[in-house]
Length: 379
Image 1 (cartoon, rainbow, N blue to C red):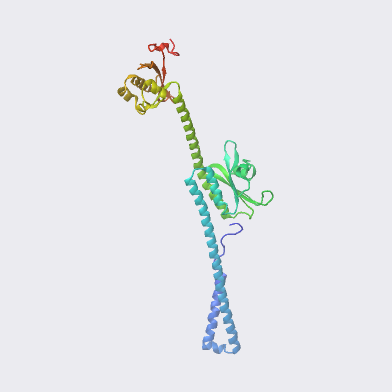
Image 2 (tube, rainbow, N blue to C red):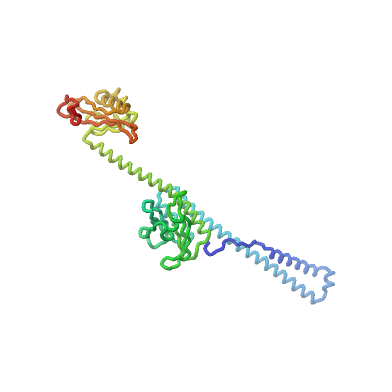
């Protein structure tokens, strides 16, 4: 972490420590033997030597105890450092798990950015901002922030190559600013690019006044940017799909409104001849309910319905198979005057037939008028 060198590089037990331990053990053994073996007592039998050896034995035992205590404290500190390191590792894993869980449960890009910053910035005691690249303007706009006094909508955008954010976008590499400052306050910043595969999508910037960032913190920021890159791709695809679906729904609503309110009868079939649309005017002109026609094929209607509906079904079926337009007169029944149907194929831009349509109009007052007398048909 910040200001630390990481785990101790020295070995738990050095060669010098082993030599000192061996020498102390040898000295203690010698002093004990001297006190107990008769031959050594005779050789070192004077009172002076005895006092000296007793003092030496006590000192050696004290040194040995001190050595054991010192080594124990060193091991204790090492264990504490390991525990702290494990806790840091667990905290980093929790951050990544929280972000990944949010990415899996929600495809809201804005919510994902906010959760990512709220998860990682407290762990590294920093403030942070995420900038996303607008492909249309080539500007890096702030989309989410944590710990800053200024909200993202009031923060400036950056062009590619402008400021630390723009330089990261230009180079595609992380940039560290050790005390470049914000208003001269000596704020250390670390900015990492956010990649979605091979596509650059934004920049994650972290800042702190507590000193430069350590390798563990940088690694965590890179891991967060990787998770964001992959998740933002899915979120953007979802957003595009949602927008397209909403646009389709709006278009469908407009078309349904037009079809239902059109001052003419409208009947649509698909490429198999199944009836898809029958508007209110068509219901009235054909003296039939739409639900009795929808989903049924033109072939079925020719057999089951007969009359004007059968005539129209036969013309629609022929239009789908031949791809040619036509006009027919449907005999009136009751008070309804004759109805003329213009039938034409529905085609894609590339020419494929996807169905047929019929527009129905009343030719009021003259049921027996020939087709050539209908306005727009010519003579």
